[in-house]
Image (cartoon, rainbow, N blue to C red; front, side, top):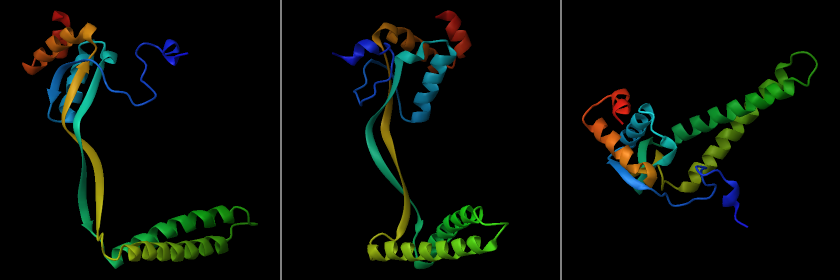
Length: 174
């Protein structure tokens, strides 16, 4: 038995599925595609029939800086100290009165373990990755699709966007 019978018609699929609909616009950036859908929403268009599709996805890795032993050890010590401080504060809650002992032990132990693990991880790379980077997925273009029953109306509204007509005025003419 299919579960489609129990799903509302505009429900987002739980498994990855190919998008469907007719193209109503194509944009170079996600911000432009988002602006187009926002324009449709402002014009009281049923945007639940619209999908933004990133075409030709790319993985972009932007290098943020160089790694050195000093930077690695400093970062490891800082993150270990924060974790140790957290554990020390938790342990101090179970002692009679306010005790500095568990806090200091947690802080020192956390710092030492943070240093040790950061050094082991960085040393294991043997200089093959001496930089920090941030990855993101972007697309060459973003297509806006609409269900066939509303595609022509959506195209007409987006044509009004391209000539600079306000959405409230475009909604009145639709």
